[in-house]
Length: 608
Image 1 (spheres, one colour):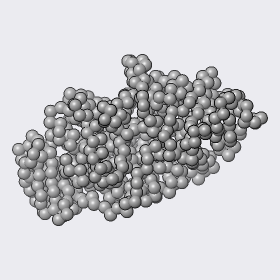
Image 2 (cartoon, helix red, strand yellow; image 1 turned 120 degrees about the vertical axis):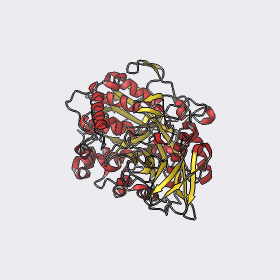
Image 3 (cartoon, one colour; image 1 turned 180 degrees about the vertical axis):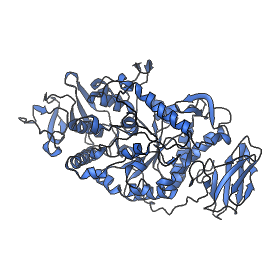
Image 4 (cartoon, helix red, strand yellow; image 1 turned 90 degrees about the horizontal axis):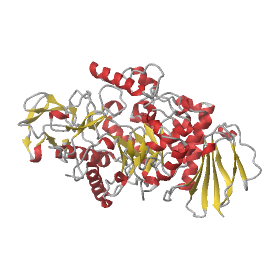
């Protein structure tokens, strides 16, 4: 495989000739058609068909024709201007980059900010994100994470129904718009993470099966037949997704990929597809000198995914940890229903602070089996945690954010719990000002039968967890409109205060925890008081940050541990400056502290 240039689809060489290559192993004839001509491709090795021609130019609309049958869009299309049922647009992705001095920041210093491009701004485009980048920098974010941008059916979609993995959604700004966003982010010191989906392809506009065995019925996923990574004819499929990874890194300068739900990737071959992706990514790094990260979403509690290839792992750099979120939410008062049923609250939150995973070989009621294993030897900066994200909000029937479900004081406490954790913190767009609009699941399909299936599926999904009436219609444009951020809120007193509070938490995190290896904190559980005490080490081994997390509705009186001496209070969510009830009076910081209900306090301290 060619590492430094794209090897499939329609690409242009230095002579501006179109280099055409498509995988269609079962075909007897393959042609490429534009609106004015039809050119036959020649059979190549391993089921590929190819052509080099000066007759196809950038800006031409084209289709592939397999065995003289229906015209089909290019599976590796870079642009779908007429939607997922239309033809592909030949484009040149060369871009006049200005980020030559950019160096990807260390993963341990990533502070993620998750964005849905359409719902983030009034424009609903990459330009709309650019217009708010200074806000993110002011907040202290170091990396934006874009939900999937691959072309999807209709005008609106969460992004996980994409059917052209190489094509950037036109309504967002297309390939050039994404490149401009990345370039501007790098100029301003922000890394860019892109969410990609390799475990399934969306149901509408998915014509991959007409080209080859892209799917297998050997395995099932929640979204239908699995992508064929290990069955007969899988080589071309593997190559297709590896090419996609390399394209984002090489041609779009993406700094990290978040691989959606890798537990739904079924591959029992000797060389797992994730390991092969890791190998090709490492080879690209050697060729270009740029650093790129691979971050997996995985709910298997299996450290093999984030173990180096040389240690018989799959080589992912980090992973999302839903279990921290679940334990945090139950501790804060979330009813233990549905997938929250497995989580007891404060004890499990303490375990997650120590082990990242909660289930490390215990029996899971929800899964009805013993589940997980300990992540021995893993760094805390290999885990991404959050108090909310697109899934955890959208998995709710009414899409309520934390700001609508918990008290003002509890929201501040949960923010402290995430941002002072030893893990990599992720914020969901609008969280930093206490956005009150929901984030609902939305689609724009054209097939009436599919629309009915989606509606019914959502209603069934919520039956076990919620009894709040009628499920919002994912197809209704109003459902999407409800989910857009209200930027005017940040100017209101209470919301502006929350923004400053997040700013302060992030600033303190950077001051005390940047540029050091993140280590698991010492954790003390006050179960009767529903509270935790955390000790986090700083760069200076004699210093520490001591945090008190009081999830109860009662005031706490705590003795200061004998082995530490408090230097000063860094932040107290109950303070009047954060519109809290006010800090209880304490005699001094030598013997005892008084902690307000539902509050987070962090102190600088030293060991004695």
